[in-house]
Image (cartoon, rainbow, N blue to C red; front, side):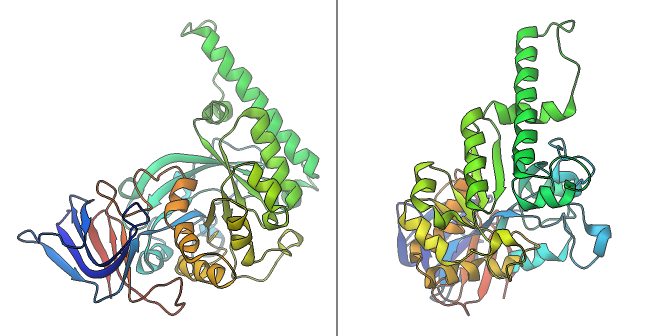
Length: 389
């Protein structure tokens, strides 16, 4: 049940036109942000949260992870991220593989993470459908805010390593060829359906794979393209341009080695994960400094956990490390709020503190980008307090 909540006495970083409001207030009602300002009238029967001079920001957003599909601490029984029997599986829905009671969700909202984009892994050139969900709830029906959110594609080492000794793809050429073939078939399938104009005798036979790809071909569904190396990044973008796809580049580990070329393509980079040791050749040039390099080149940057690449609680820490290595403070905050929301197409609902948006708020004792020891002291999702230290 929603409640009326007033947050006061905090430095509010709105990520919107209001900028930063010192000693400000936020009024939340019916799950939404109602008012933001220096002073807000306190309604009767209102729950008051005193930020005690702390740092109030939009709920943190993880623009790319696999939370819930790679279960925590339960071994193979909880590994549901990749259907490794077929390299082209667009019909797979992350929704059906997520365990909403995985303890990682609790770690997430206790660290101020209120929304995640999650779904299939990168074993397949086309792996299936991502979704966006809040981090607090008992069932997917309570938590999902958009499904499908995006189609996952993967370039480079991962598909090669899975299929190279068994079947195509064994090369980067094979990865790209399989993706192109699937997209050509989806386009042909969609064209036949349109020409049939509802005539059942002319309709093509139902094909679940192609049905899942039709919104991709029509530019209605985002593509999240896993690409680490510079050549894979450019191959992904080349295919996006050939088929006029909406696409973000996930990981983008060598994007900072081609900053001008990447910036010219006007794609959002979702960087990370950053806290682990480089575990494969593709990630040897990965560097937290890449966020600042791409930012200065004019690229819109978000930061991901790629959980199980790292815990959700480390997302804001990574933003702080990127700031220490050259990214602007505002850019680091935007990378886990507004830019993350824009990367998944949900900026109309989340990512900034503005009237009408979802009541997702994170309260820290101090600025978590400038202070890596900052602690989350309160988290609200849809206007409801889900954690209070």
